[in-house]
Length: 350
Image 1 (cartoon, rainbow, N blue to C red):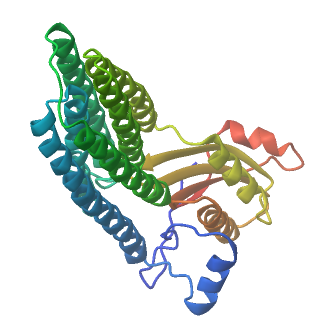
Image 2 (cartoon, rainbow, N blue to C red):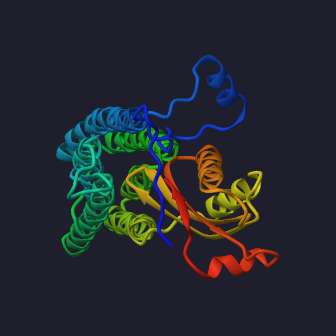
């Protein structure tokens, strides 16, 4: 049967909502500022999250850049390969802000007839570049560590190496917390992956202390061995980041979000049953499609209103959901509502 997409006479699309916020803050916001259905509000919300992501990237770039500069000076003085590996890794981590920044800027562009879902997928491509950068830094750190094992040299200025290691830990841990917190708040898997990368850098910076301690005891192999341990740590975060990015590329979502959507739909008065619910991330925003079953005696106008109510419930219940399409089908008169889900819906809203 044919689907129906509704548009209000005043030009407002009744389906365009900003990101959902639950609890008393959301209810208070509704009292102080009525919920708007303008399509521009959704765009504004998306741009605001992009601005927040850009702000996080710029601040992270400054902090990591300063950390890298301090460590680079100490590397030149001490000739520590463990600290050199950590410095290179920190520099690579700082530079990942570039593809992410480009992705956030692209994500602000409006959808068009070629890119009908917009440019949010640029974040996933940035995630791929971040994974490649982590892999490259792991390879470089391993090469330098092996070279130093084969050609051992003494390191100097051990106190400065230790201080640089602490600076690296503090800088990376602060950036990691900031990136992960912002990434989770705005729904950016790439920014979370970048934060995990920074966190591993922080712990590898602490590992440099072990190399300095070994060198102080006259163990020339301690510094390059720590460099190899740093490489292993980089590979571990590489696996986590690659897994997260691949899941996003495969349209993976948290199953709890689907359960939340089902609960929200079944709580709408008039919804007899729910069918398939599909969700996908477009950048740091969610889109959804859902099938519901209603009474066959409803008129088209009544079914349309129910679709709007179901969509409204979805967008308010699921965090980061900015658009939803609800397909409505009816159960046979006097029949099982589940039977209606075997064929496509008659009315859709979204």
